[in-house]
Image (cartoon, rainbow, N blue to C red; front, side):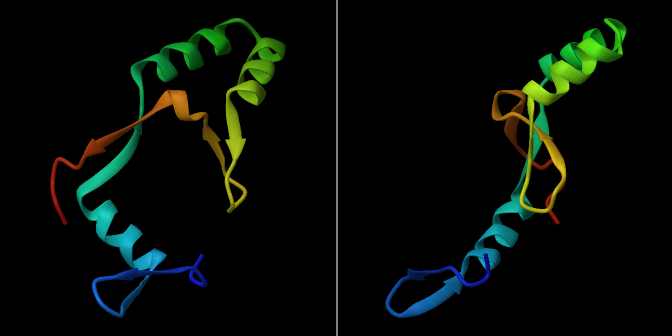
Length: 82
């Protein structure tokens, strides 16, 4: 990602990573109440159901970590700004 650039103002080049760092000082991505409810329900339904639910409602990000699908996330302001 650090190879990607965009222009801000006249000729001032900022990397995408710089912008992301500034953004996440004020905001965070959190999981919805529905995610936790569905997660618990899937666990209670048994291993096979949980695996199917997990596989169908998560994706692997660019670092190889499994993340909930977008409909289980929301953008929230941070309670304490860094």
